Amino acid sequence: MVERRPILGILAHVVLILGVLIVALPVYITFVASTHANEAIIHPPMPLTPGSHMIENYTAVLTGTQEGGGSKAMVGRMMLVSLVTALVIAIGKIAISLLSAFAIVYFRFPFRMFFFWAIFVTLMLPVEVRIAPTYKVVSDLGMLNTYAGLTVPLIASATATFLFRQFFLTVPDELTEASRIDGAGPLRFFWDVLVPLSRTSIAALFVIQFIYGWNQYLWPLLVTTSEDMYPVVIGIKRMISGGDAQTEWGAVMATAMLAMIPPALVVLLMQRWFVKGLVDTEK
Amino acid sequence: MAAEKRVTFRSPWLPWALLAPQLVVIALFFFWPAGQALVQSLQQSDAFGTSVQWVGLENFRNLWNDETYLASFATTAVFSVLVASLGLSLSLLLAVFADRVVKVSGLYRTLLVWPYAVAPAVAGVLWLFMFAPSVGIVSYLLREWGFEWNHLLNGNHAMALIVMAAVWKQIAYNFLFFLAGLQSIPKSLIEAAAIDGATPWRRFWTIQFPLLSPTTFFLLVINVIYVFLDTFAIVDAATSGGPGKETAILVYKLYYDAFKAMDLGASAAQSVVLMFIVVIFTVIQFRFVEKKVNY
Image (cartoon, rainbow over all chains, first blue to last red; front, side, top):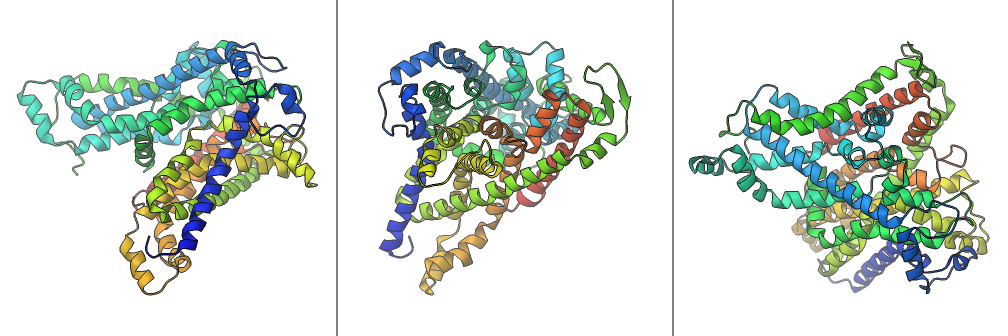
């Protein structure tokens, strides 16, 4: 702080605390709703303190035994689908981008820069702008309702390839020469030198891509039609049936809490890498 | 930093093998579908795909004459202006104050960044629940105060609902970049102005705000891209494009025409228009933003 202005200091805290509370409010209400029986919620105003139905609601949705008019798929199963999808997308993106960046930086071969730009241009082709034809490809390959269909079309990554390329260019040539003199081939050098050196970039990208994978919506909405392949984010929407009153809100809100916890934990526990990842991937 | 390596490896096949996975994925799931969209945008077929004929630019002409499509453009524009202006001003306000309370700014950062992790669809559901006309707690309070909230009937209410959900979800991101931007402004500038007697208010507008302009511009572009592409899930979860088509943004209409109305030609033409928009944004982002943002 430049000068002493106690009133401004207090004002800063007031504004920030208000901000934190407003940001947290929707989640608090969701949590409270997830601990009440449906009867308590559908007759407004709903209670604003946690109720006694927490365990019932959460076990009901996890095992798919909730009441109400919406979908009754098992949320436990959906969490598993989401977890597998998010991990495959995050690890897949990092793996294929590391390999491509290694090839582009450490080898000389025809059309090298053409391939680099081809990968880079995919930045301008997000799934939203080519949904119908991409769906057609996946369905022709018989990949609907499979983990492959949920993940493979999303694991190309221009940003990750670009990031690893930038990083590899800063790795001193002396390291390459030294490993060569020690008799290491390209793959040995990649695995024993480059990958360990890229650890922080990998961690940062992992956080961002895990959240990206977990939160996918449009793509799973298209390629999954059977309940046992719904990611949890899709499942929530399917649990909300027609009218407000027929929806089993306690169950929906319990599912929403469950859907938020894994990515939120990743962000909070890996906050340092998360911030690095955001800043790196966007510039 | 050299743009090329001096020391490289030699192998006739290894680089191709290393590149293969990424190239297969982008060829199969990016370039081929994008090419298909381009081709289909010039064709018209019946709903069963049995007959296909070339129609030139007719699909685009139809779009241009389609009032719902133009309305969808207007909806998307209003939505992005609202989300970007509200989101940026709120997060700038929070960031400026967090920058002031140096000692605990990290704590506030932790308490403010986690909505980034919430899926847009889940954000849509949370806000939908608070504002659900018959059960929502906020719509109940509004009714008590004499304001009849019903986003199922009133298009403005529906727009307000998705704006709130989209802003809420994006505040974390904007806040992080504004805070980083503010913390990178040299303290000496602010101190010099303070010694000259400038009030915090004046210092903000004459020093911090102008120096933040690269960050602001970068966030503006990112927020507009976010609204165009990533808010589909918020819209689908909270309003399903309704009431009527009042919140049907471009991606929502594209999805609807391709998978509900099964109109391939129209949806392909919309894909091409959207691709064009994304290309423009990406070029702006890299051409004008990349070099000027400092962290």
